[in-house]
Amino acid sequence: MENAPNKSLLEHNKGLLQSIDLYEYILETSVYPREPAPLKELRMATANHPWFFMSTAPDAAQLMGMLLKIVNAKKTIEIGVYTGYSLLLTALSIPDDGKVLAIDINRETYEIGLPIIRKAGVEHKIDFIESQAIPVLDKLLKNLSTKYPPYKALFPFCITILELQRVKLIFFFVFLFHQKENEGSFDFAFVDANKDDYMNYHERILKLVKVGGLIIYDNTLWGGTVARPEEAVSEDRRDSRRSIIEFNKSISTDHRLEISLAPWGDGMTICRRIC
Ligand code: SAM
Ligand code: CA
Image 1: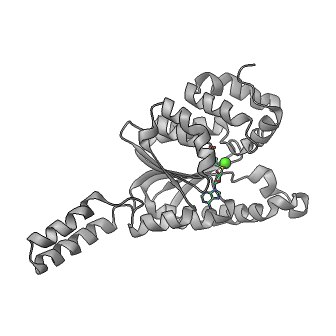
Image 2: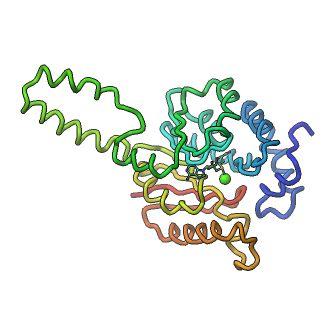
Image 3: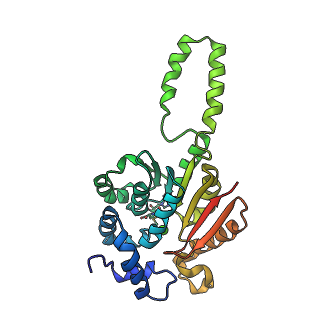
């Protein structure tokens, strides 16, 4: 089978489904036939990478692509890129003048997918930032912005042509206006990085996404371990399991959101900001 991923990937991505056969059935009947060619190429390019299992499951990605279109997402943010499967999906799903701000501590893995992203003609929609996510989110919220705003270059010129009082006034209004530039401006966020930081991402991302916008948190079933006693879980998965359990509990009572914990892939919690 041309599409066939290896068995361990199927076992990983089948999530809570009864069997690999059933998961393969879903992939073969409704996912692979509709998967855009560049996404398929990126999936294949990732298949032999040692961390292949980190890639977003294609069936979960298919749902995400539909949600991006339902909310007409134009300005989006992604935390956790790896080789770029969900990033490319996002870039393909938003309009030509849309933007994805993509953050990952590892540029090397992003570069595995980059030639495919280029070939798909969507690189211009992506701003990739190699960094820990939290400092970037904090910068966005303080509106230090991740890029130097071009109008700042006009400031010295303004100073030479306007007397001091007027400059002060302009600075004051620019400051007021600029403060709000990023808050509530994103239509969509996909969070798929360090599971122990989900709570920390949440408070920041919630401010950045507009009312009515969507936030998707990936891996919120953590391989089904959230419903198992800690002793039954391998030691290397316990810390993240605890963080995910705490995160799931916390957002279940977060009245700023509507939520649905969808059992696609490894579980994805779809949140809609309502206030
Ligand atoms: N969404 C990706 C896809 O579809 O292929 C998979 C992302 S993978 C599960 C998690 C990524 O998060 C890794 O590439 C890792 O380098 C990145 N990461 C881990 N901790 C991070 C942090 N604190 N800040 C930013 N990125 C981080
Ligand atoms: Ca994931």
